[in-house]
Length: 116
Image 1 (tube, one colour):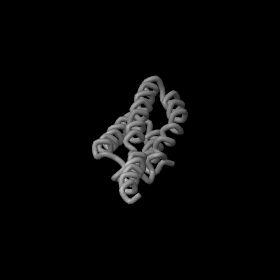
Image 2 (cartoon, one colour):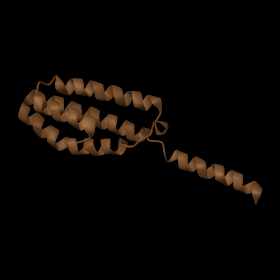
Image 3 (cartoon, helix red, strand yellow):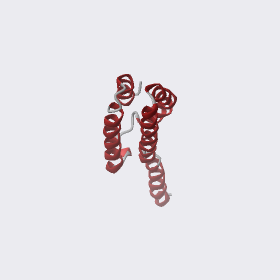
Image 4 (cartoon, one colour):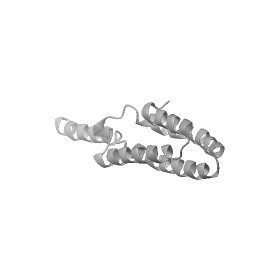
């Protein structure tokens, strides 16, 4: 009995830790954010009203993906995913705020900084 307890404990610990990896959640957010910003940029070239419509339609899905990331600990995410996330957020903020639609820029900043 003593000989089987250690391997079973090791397998249980491995299974528990493998469920803690959150890289897919970070990658999912980055992909969704890229799509969101591309759609927003395209809409803004048509009109500020169209950009507002696209923003309002897409912010809920983006917020939901961001909510999944709250409470994630550094050991649950690879450094590569964290850097890609940070780079994506910085670039997307820059791109959205250069659309010269101040209200959307402010709301997008708020969405990314607090999830509100």
